Length: 277
Image 1 (cartoon, rainbow, N blue to C red):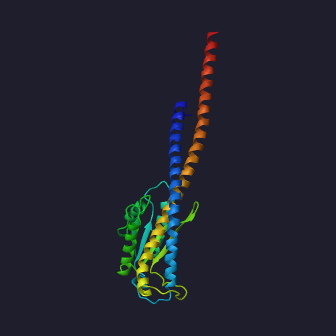
Image 2: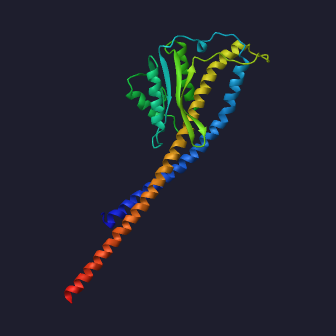
Image 3: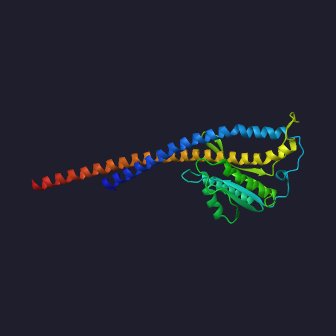
């Protein structure tokens, strides 16, 4: 049995950890609310972009992003987190990326965030330059540059398909790791045109397709960040609860050790008194 001093030292250490995890849980909850607000702000733009593409569905146009060809090389755009301490969040994303890589004849990786970059370096695949860090508030310009690079590799024929591997945020504390086909894009489908477009519809569609790719990657990044904060909040909640249970257990152990020490002292006193009698 540990001495009372050792048990008190352990209780103090666990209590310090509990304070840290509780603070991290609070920070994660605040960041999650901000991420949800960014998703709500970006959703109307993405919806309107999809509506415009649907309204142009009757337009026949040849565009590099609409070309279908046999798949020999797949580009995986992997969106992870910059930090850990978020449960199995990063592990689930990298495992899904590994499954997608095994299903393709040949893959090249384009990581976003530090954990995804670490996974890409450990793999034996070709790694394209992505984003080393996303930060707490990713910038649309930086994410758009990655989307443009992926679209350029597809248009040039270096990649025959592009997939997004990320965690889709479902609201609350729910999320789902997905691998979505980004390119080639399916031709826009929709009702016959009811509008007169200026500039002409083919010119407008050609300008909208790259913007739509940027919007999809940006939406995936926002989903991934919200999912990360939700996962970290869950992990820190569990860690705080476990620390509280450990403190209770150690406090009980401390009381037992203290009681045993008092009992030994009383026995010593009684034994000494009997010896002197």
